[in-house]
Amino acid sequence: MKTFKLSKKYTKYLLLVGLFLLFMGLSAMAVIGNWEPISLGLIITGIVAIGIWIVLQGSNDLTSPAQEFWGRRSTQTGTNAAFAMLAFVVILGLINFLGNRYNYRLDLTENNLFTLSPATQQLVRNLNQPVKLWIFDRTQYPQDKELLENYRRQGANFSFEYVDPNSNPGLAKKFGVKDVGEVYLESGEKRKYLQKVKETELLSEQTLTNAIQEIRSDRTAKVYFLQGHGERNLETKEGSLSEAVQTLKDKNFQVETFKLTESKEVPKDANLVVIAAPQQALFADEITALKEYQKRGGSLLVTVDKKTKASELEPILQDWGIKIDDRLVVNASEFQVRSLGPTAALVSSYGNHPITQDFKNRYSFYPDARSIELVKDFKDEKNIKATPLLFTSEQSWAESNLDKIEFNAESDRQGPLILGIALSRSIESATPQPSPTPNQENKSDKPLQETRMVVLGNTDFATDGFFSQQINGDVFLNSISWLSQQDDRLLSISPKEQKNRRLNMTFLQASLLAWLSIIIVPFLGLVIAGYLWWRRR
Image (cartoon, rainbow, N blue to C red; front, side, top):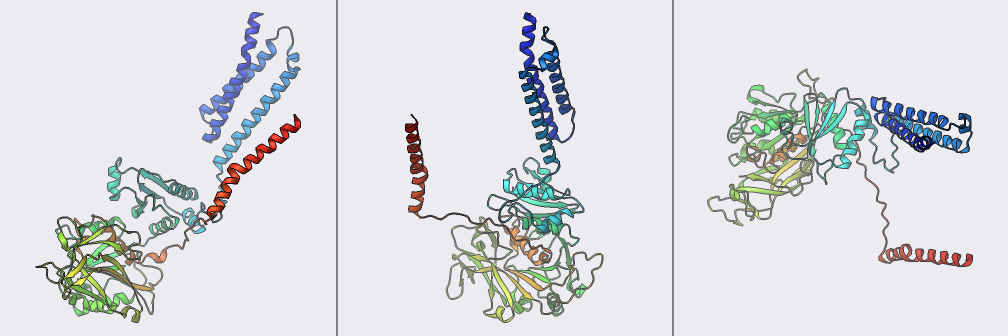
């Protein structure tokens, strides 16, 4: 009898163990999504334990048959509870399984803040080859990760990965990462730099979708550097632009040099032409060829140095109402670039333009720079849109006598001065371009509607050694990107902003609300409760 009591005492725990194992097995199966040995073993063990408990309940009572055990009210109640729990576990497991297999999200926000636009959804679903986003940062901002998860749910060919550049320097070097937070898009052999993410500048659907649209296109912007007049060399040597050129290639630009005296015209596949600090004047036929290139929508980037004569560039710039000052800019502020002295102009003020819109108060510097002047009212007469890009401080001036650096109101020009300017002009008759050859994949399918030009009063800022300092390289790269005129392929995606639902209250209204919620309403509740207690006492 003692053995029977002991066995009956512990058999009830067998049921609990069996139900627990069964629940764990079904939960593991629901999370994993398929039948794994672990989840299957837990389920089988739990069923066996429950079966043993049932058998022992019928055989432990030697004085009563099994029918008497199952006829008990307690047995029936326990069995019903067990089946109800089992049904609950099965239903919960099925819900988790279906939720994991068939993902569905419902965005109830007013502006669908967490839903990608139809254009983005279609673009990601139709990707015919893998596209991967690389974020070189240890910090994973929740807003960015939620946005990227939305992209990944739309198509299997989109993926993203966070990489710590300090832990994986080889991969960071492969992409040319210079700072933590840089974001790159990769598809096959193509790589495209997007932006640098930080808490105040997160990823946006507009930026990411248009980057995917660009990188999946067969078009590649082609940059031609004019040579033959003492322009800056592109090969590695002192004062060359080799670092800038290599960065352009890393950003998926094609870079070539050409001489107008040999080609007679600007190549048809040129997205833009760079004239980097010529030391001699261009021939008349070269000037004509460049003007013809601009008439059909071509873009120019013109930079000068202290040896470039303004008169030699005048035939190109006069049609845009631009003049180059021969005087060098002097920086007389207390903060100067070390080892460069006062003739290195320091800029922290930028114009409102796509080239400089993200610079804010960041620094760039320009050794031996020259200021740029706009002819008064010229841009209005010629329908030219001109936007100054770079402004020096008020503690600067254009110095005419470098032997004695001292401001002279009669011969010098007081700052702030303009060191860079972006110009655009509509094309009166946009004629379709010739059909591209197999080597001209970068041409647009529709004619360009405007011609663009950027004029910078300095070239040294983009040369080897200076290019990677501060945001000098960003000024050069952003100018090239804007001039390449690839924005005709960008999708129009309006940024989504959460509507302001704040309730603006006066001090009196806020005080009244605080008294009502903290003191008056709770006090009335206590009074009513006390009155009811006293009535029922």
